Length: 133
Image 1: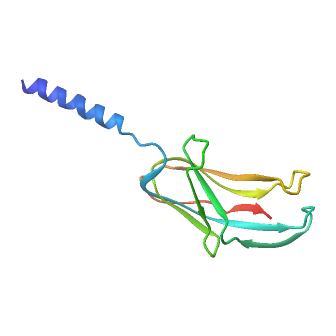
Image 2: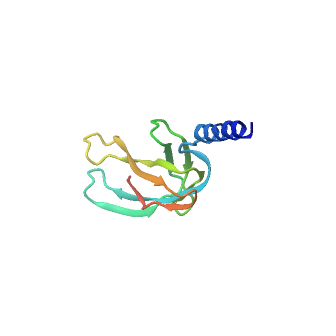
Image 3: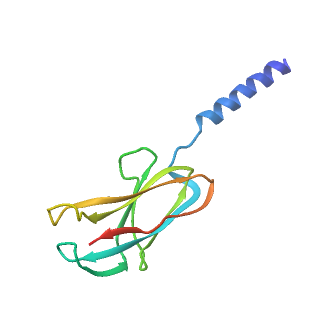
């Protein structure tokens, strides 16, 4: 009787933990931090007019292999941002930049950094996301 009970309990525990694997996304103890840096060019993208960390710039996160925006926030006064309380997994962090390779002066493109959180908690620091304005 005890052997049957312990076997049943073990199967239940294994099933419970295998069903509860959490994918990338909110609900963890890790953070992704970074800054958005702007290079401001003339209309032909030949003369650099100024460079600075951008306040109020939208930064987006995509969780795992999803193709939709998981969350959006604005950078602080010093261009910094933090996506808090994330679980282990893969993420894409991105901001929108002018596209210097296009003939259309209004063309934009996403500047994407892919990152993987490998530890359950702690900070992952990105290199600057450099956008053109």
